[in-house]
Image (cartoon, helix red, strand yellow):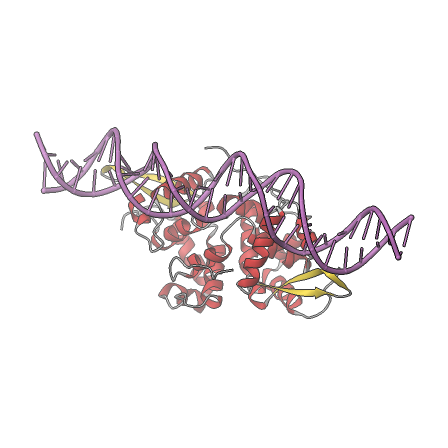
Length: 141
Length: 141
DNA sequence: TATAATTACTTTCAATATGCAAGTAAAAAA
DNA sequence: TTTTTTACTTGCATATTGAAAGTAATTATA
């Protein structure tokens, strides 16, 4: 797959060139919440991503170094996707987006234990979750 | 224009339902950097947005309460767009995206005075810029 | 061991979105 | 009065999306 074309040298614009669509950050979200996911896991998320879109976005995210595909121990069909350090580094942005949505969009669920903990102590939460995601092992579950 | 359809009650997903594309957040960026812009101003940004896309996104952002269209003093053709409080509230997310891009995408310009100031003192910078954007007046320039 | 079921995609195709270029209408400037 | 500016709108070719079905390589089951 060819490298993403950048529209300008603006960091915001270039970021959107990579993940500026309705699906890419949902994949990152799932990997933030679950640390590792199989292809099938992603299809089970509430937003019901189409499999062609999923395959395309996983490839793009991998091409852009945001996620890493690992072998699933003891199974040659399955694979395990995880966030790379670059992907983990996106979590502060994702958290701000989540906070914004929970606060500003009616009927969103901002009462999850996850968001509650963020609101209680953002800095502490960020360190904890990012450290955890950067650790090796504990891939399945 | 019809209300945005939400794919789930997830705050991240619903946020992307509103601004998950390659252009909407660039409009917010321009209004963060300049406080107010005319239609023509937006077309002059580096990414060269097409006028039909611009008109569509301005309408969507206005429909979703992120931006406000004001009359241009002394001119009945021009209008002035500004961030609403809801739009200003998105700035922390935008800043995190900018920081991520500047750090993780090659050839982006992360040396602007703007980003430099963010990196020097994020909290202070956020308060300053958000307070400024929430103020009335100083629309032109 | 033969067969069924999983898993991770790929393909097809209709619908929608994008983007370039040109057009328009109202107001402002010359 | 004519020209220019401004903010869009329209037409059309191309690209992307999304639902559904298909496939090939395992893995589980009878």
